[in-house]
Image (tube, rainbow, N blue to C red; front, top):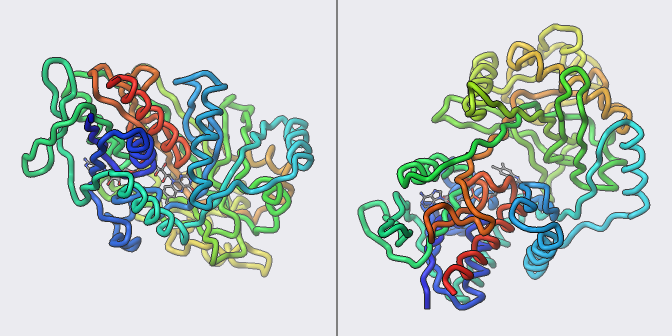
Length: 449
Ligand SMILES: Cc1cc2nc3c(=O)[nH]c(=O)nc-3n(C[C@H](O)[C@H](O)[C@H](O)COP(=O)(O)OP(=O)(O)OC[C@H]3O[C@@H](n4cnc5c(N)ncnc54)[C@H](O)[C@@H]3O)c2cc1C
């Protein structure tokens, strides 16, 4: 029986372990965080580390589409990619996670309305677990994986990959223990992306840079988006902003949700994100509005550029996210608390630990122009989105790890070393992470056969 060391117990590592153990392989799943029952969402480290990875305290919105949250067509044909997505969906289904039903007619109508406004609407099968139900799901998953023979080594930080004679041989654990394995999968998530890059570079393997998405979180009264959300829980719209011909997209719509703060203290950066709870709702809906930046020469690392914008935004906000109404942004004036709550119709921000200010001082002109133009176009499909009272929080930053160069089975140039999930820049969400975990697991099994 061959042994596979999987680093990271997030969705990528879990689905890889599920696939491998299901076929009788011995899996050792290592994670520097705690078992799910011991994780405390109020603890900064626990938030992103441990069983379930960043997925455990996420919003639990799962997109079942091969080109959302990563692009599976890079690794297989569209037919195979759809088959894999159905497989992932079936596993989630066994844990009671079901796709929300939508009317085909209403979806088609929305697609038409979007097309007439010059916007691309991507219909997607989606499920929403809700942050408050994810821990229960992760607990059941870990119990089942243990029954399938997966050995969990939690509170275990992996420091390096062992390689000899041109092949991965296992991993090194903090303290110096060497764990030998026939294959190694690095599924270390966004929190482990820097570590993954360092390991890859130390092994002399190449990386490819990914683009970075920068923008704002938009918050409106829930009623403004209700019609569209009735058709699709997390609608994905793609707009081409005319001035710079940049693509702007909506992302992570959180109906009746909360805008939340996202901190990266090691980089001195504060930003925002959003989530919805199944059991606690607000009167607002929020979503990210993002523009993609993909630099070439002389700056290849778009991440460094994205982080420098985030630092500027953090400085302008005095260490807090900046909040501005769309009306104030259009009138080139900063928002103030008194201006933000002038009339009864104003949107009450769900995140209060912010600095009312001027987003145009925080973001490059090109990005502000892209976002304003996109909101104008989207308002043709969602009337009211472009109202003065619409709130904008800066900054939302989505950076994706640099991708180690791999083959289509996600094997790096070092035989026996595979990568999957957000930490390897091949996924950007639970569905994509799970799918790439399964791809790597199948690659490992084919390689060991
Ligand atoms: C607030 C928030 C909300 C989100 N909402 C959604 C959503 O609604 N829908 C969606 O699809 N996605 C959402 N996401 C993103 C989603 O959680 C991730 O895309 C997904 O968890 C990535 O899975 P992964 O397995 O690649 O990595 P992760 O889930 O990040 O797991 C990686 C694991 O690796 C471990 N690790 C890292 N380095 C090491 C090491 N050296 N040794 C040992 N262990 C290590 C970490 O402790 C971690 O547990 C959200 C994320 C956040 C932060």
